Length: 126
Image (cartoon, rainbow, N blue to C red; front, top):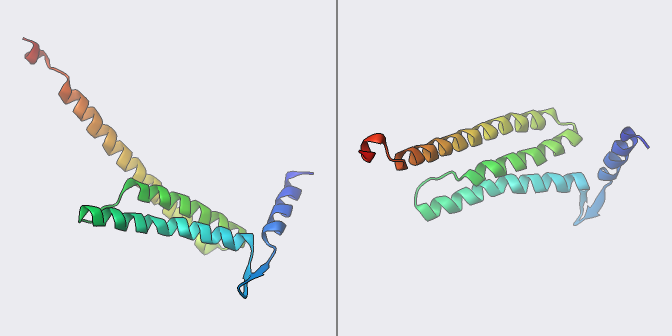
């Protein structure tokens, strides 16, 4: 069995429809809901953190959930062959990854700044 046959079998299996509560469900729809749930959780967490701090805060986990939700939704849109959703999510992922890189770079700079301030200078040894 080659990879093409395996992929075709997987897509066919995912494409099977099931009726539940009068609606058509398949594994692809469930994947889409999971992606949307992960993507929505970023706002819930941002809201909770902001309420605790009594100011608008975007925690780092917001960006990780954005990437995870965007990736799952991109897979969903890829299987659905929906270019608008796919391209929109892929572009968003570039922004999320860039924001994480900026956050980690700023954190490294502040940590190295703290380390350099803790070290005694030559003037302090004299």
